[in-house]
Picture 1 (cartoon, rainbow, N blue to C red):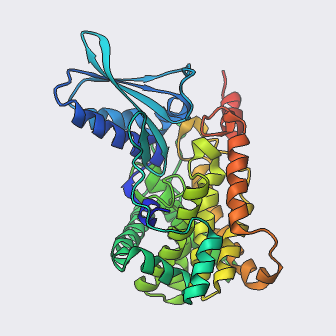
Picture 2 (cartoon, helix red, strand yellow):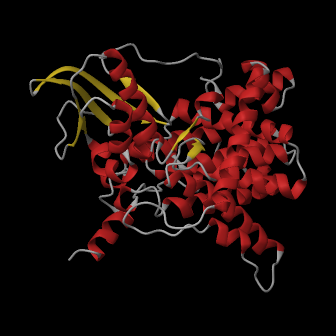
Length: 404
């Protein structure tokens, strides 16, 4: 199993699979062809159907500049294309396509180049399931943060300090911003309004909802505006963990070092999901993005509350289980509706999962490992219209409503 660094990556939004992945692939192709006169990039599947809204063409033009580039959104998918986020890069000479590279954007900013050895990255963890992790921790009398540090080395904390600082910075930037997000939906930024709203009766429950939602909106709106965010585990779900963690840090006066420990635990659960399922909305629906982020946040919150390892995995299981079947249906392909609100709702759900795990961990019947396998099976069985294509669900109904 890989490092938690593979879950938390700092980059530009709005989509780890539709902008960060293509940007990385384009950079490789450009470096390999420094004398190219022109490039052509063909996008298939989800990259074609929601690439405009996600800014895929924009990031490709920027990355391949100053070489003249044509980006083609292919309506038909060739039979040899099996992954929903597939792109073909070509060097164009005299109008003819010559050197080719096929790249798959597999989620979380990761790519796979066909015909080449897979960039698997270093396998850091010998354990590949939570059951194995728990067994090892019990044998060595470790908690989960100690397990991460033992396996990855103390330098992982240095990396996560940067991650936490970036999350906090994105919250601050989002809370200060105003105006409309880019795109034809004309979505108004709401984070500042939520944060500053003063209700007549500011009960603790209302305040928790308002502040946590404000933080989630702040990060998600920055992501939608192509700002710098941390994948957690993706750009589309980047607001969940920062929102839940920032609220709890403020409420409990926790130190940044304590928050880093929480990120170690959250990252471990994200790594388990990436290893045994998927965090790609195009591959497994929004359950793989928002569901995974909610599970990671719930696990981290449990750890920060001082709960047991078994309670931590139960919180993560509750959070993931109750996102099963969640579709990825962004309106007009933009990472705005319903994506931004989903981050806020998932942050609050993580808190609910944390509370339930405190009361009911001795009643658990479904393990976290089972929930992960179920999520992946559900996602791969889902109708393709609901896998980040904007052809089903809210996207379809919105389009039908606005047909002339």
